Length: 251
Image (cartoon, rainbow, N blue to C red; front, side, top):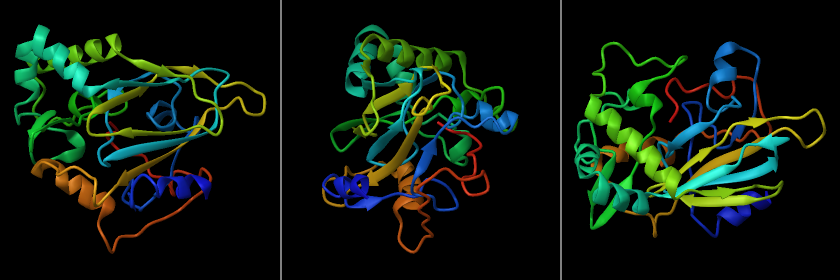
């Protein structure tokens, strides 16, 4: 309850994070099936830089940490943009074109970097664009070109150069701007002792007054998350997959 209360000073809306309406997503290891164990939310593997699909602000509460690894890592999208603009202008051109087809947002190509209302915004994830072992790219969608793939690699390299590593502790709460701050985590190993198993609770937030005006191609994701008259579920502890469905193409 304190976590939700603190959020009220940051934003006035909390977003749904899946089709069932879960408001709290528990990021924990789940080895109950091969799919779960390799899914971003439940694996122990490193995750590359990305944004969440929706939310002006992303928030995490750290309930417990791993025995080793599992740091939260962030990077300024503005700094990444400036690095690419100076050293890889061709990649900036690729990333700003409305030619990226995301598997989790089928139906409309869009940019990764947006220039909208005098702001630069970034919103993307690699898996919906190139797929991976358990989330292969759908065959009917166009494959990313070599120039596009290079642009994605340039984002990762630039973000790694300027990354800020956060060694979280139980009880820590983090808020980041999801429209220009990239985030990732490094790999980790859970222990056997009490408090040695990584457990984060994630929420997505929006503020009606201070939230940025969105490009048209991002508005559906925000509407699905923050629209009125939609089911909302509040599970304060991890639940089986039926309660927390795995997304087919997580960012």
